[in-house]
Image (cartoon, rainbow, N blue to C red; front, side, top):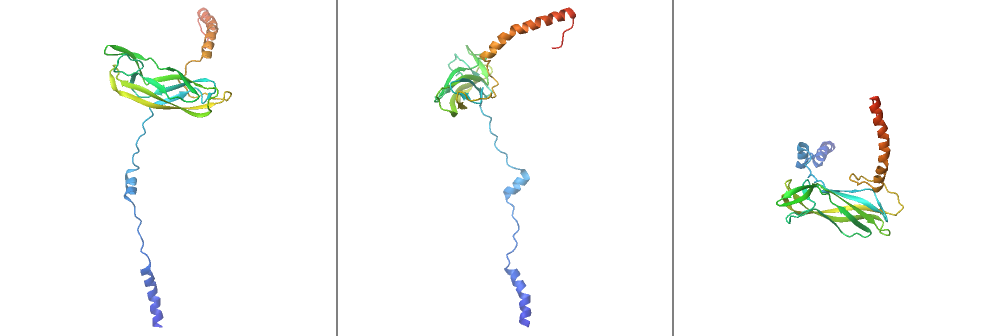
Length: 226
């Protein structure tokens, strides 16, 4: 009987001794720093040095389209130069099957004096050119690769840095000649030929409308709201 009583008293004690001790939760130093100071600052990504534009979201086979590159360097560059120590802006492209680049136009800008030389310079220049997709060229997404060479200048025309080069990549989507295309964001688009014709034809009409209004104002002393 006494043996049973002792066993009843000792078994819970032995079980408690054999049970694993409770482990207090641990917090890493990294978690503490995150709570106290917040997430670590992330390295800022520098903005791209150029932005590309196309008139449409795709180019049809056998057609020419406008393309532009805005160089974002925050400094003057020479568009032409007679001074041997000043390297003018230059855009060159690698050959791409089915794509022809033509008519590269660099803005003239304002002239600055450098020593005895005078040459035009521009700030963050916009370069415009045209591309042609061959009639039987490959379809789909293409990448036109090129290189811009320039040298930064001060506002007085003096050299501000070494000759630099920027690699550019222009994504192009070539579609069949009868495919539908949509206008893209092309803020520096030159005036199209048909737009010039419409403006020329509209000038006589505008003059014919304006003359009676001017006479009406002179006779009545009041002008209608336009």
